[in-house]
Length: 219
Ligand code: DX5
Ligand code: ZN
Image 1 (tube, rainbow, N blue to C red):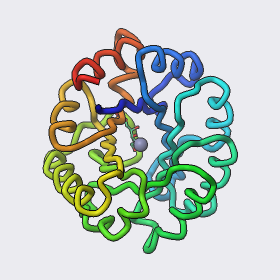
Image 2 (image 1 turned 90 degrees about the vertical axis):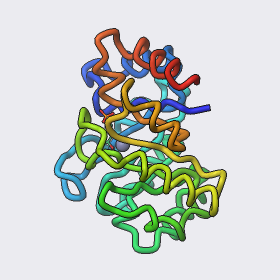
Image 3 (image 1 turned 180 degrees about the vertical axis):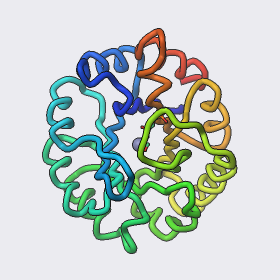
């Protein structure tokens, strides 16, 4: 059954706790925390103190998406503050196995993210070491962007690789997921759907937005 992972990047940070609780009431399966260093992506977002602040607010798993150049340096702080899953970009890890093992060794789930311009074959060899792979369907750095053309085919290609090399690995789609694109993501093989603007920018609020997405995918 597809999982919904609201991205807090689009939340009202003046009311972050309330926003997360609303998404949880709506049936969110986990919360997606977008970390940006202003180097790997042209934007700065948040550090481990946000995971520390949210940890007592929700029982939902906190998954941290590191859009940063040095995940080995910064991942431990997120693990310490209570992250459940940490995902780094394959583009900055020539051989991600040691990094993946370090996260798993701390008892957390580990994964890789693939940018739109990176072929899914870039993660093929590493799939047996991953609990989750993110297929980026926007260029990373900002919420509220549009789902890139050609994404459905890329999701299908990644689904085929996962089926071949690690069927237990989750396939997460991240970027431009909303009521209009969620179905094609699931039909193409996604099992986890990140939604930022579609949830926290929804006129009915986060709780209604998550409910709507869950209904659309039969979650
Ligand atoms: C983009 C982030 C995404 C983004 C999703 O760099 O990785 O998680 O916040 O937001 P929407 O759903 O608004 O595209
Ligand atoms: Zn993300």
